[in-house]
Length: 133
Image (cartoon, rainbow, N blue to C red):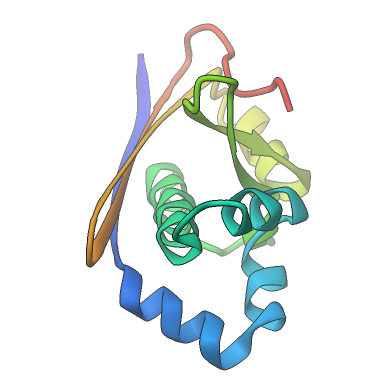
């Protein structure tokens, strides 16, 4: 059964400007060390950061809370399997929310076409595919 769905679109130039202006302060507040390392190894890091930002926003929309109730940006981590398929790894408050809402599956898809990055999240109560961090 579907518990929630969320979609977000981000202008990559906006994220690039945030990185240029705030640097590590912005990156460390919004992204985990693992995400920062992953994106910085990409050919175009701002595109990678923008898609992950969109994914976090889409998840927050899917649960219907936004950043209320103590969820931090870094509590929501986007990871990739060996084939590049993105998924979530939840930490601290986001993990609590995941369990409280009885979410068992968080499906994620990402795409980008400059200047935009987009993410879609579908939350279900099926088999858990999001806990292998």
